[in-house]
Image (cartoon, rainbow over all chains, first blue to last red; front, side, top):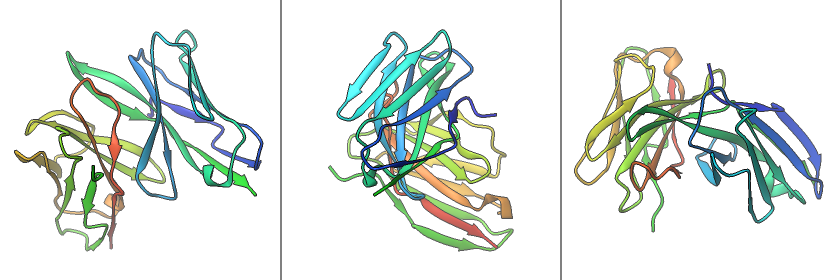
Length: 114
Length: 113
C-alpha cells in the first residue's frame, strides 16, 4: 500500500482561489517532498520540508508538516490555470544506513478554471 | 544544464517480448532511480543506482532489472513482457545519496499488446 495518501483525490477551483491538498503517511520520515506532474509527463520538484521543520514557503506555495499526525499540507495561493496538474507528496523510507527509498502518494488532481 | 533525458519516449511491444529503456541523468548526477506509474497503482519505486551499484530495490519481480554505466547513464530492462507492464516509466536523477531532490525525465510510455 502507498505510504502517502493525498486528500482530496481531485480538486476543482476558480482561478485566483487558494488550493489546499493534504498528504498522510505511515512511518517516520526524514523529509517530505511535494512534486507536480503535468498531464502524464515527468514530475517537477516543488519543495522539500525536513522532519524538524513545521512550515516552509516558496513563492505561492506554503507547506506545513505535522510529524505527530504524520501529515503535511500544500497550499497554493492565488491559483492560476497553469497550476492545473497532479500533485504528489513523497516521503523517504530508510532502507539501510545511508540509503533511502522514496514513496509517492496517490496524488491530488487539481484543476484551475479560468 | 540539460535535464534528464529518456529514450525512447513511446514504445509498443507484444506480450512475451523484452524491452530496454534508457535514461541519461543530469550532468554530474550520480544517482538514478526508476519508477513505474500506472493509473491503478500510482508511482511505484523500481530501483536506484549509485556509482554503478544497485542500492535498493522495490517490490517488483525479477523480470525487471537495470544497470548503470560509468558515465551514470542507466538502462532498465523488462523481460517477458506482460499486459500489466503497460505504464509510464520514469527515471529520476539526483546529485547523490543523501541529496533528496530528484529531477525527473519526461518518461517512456510503454504499451504492451
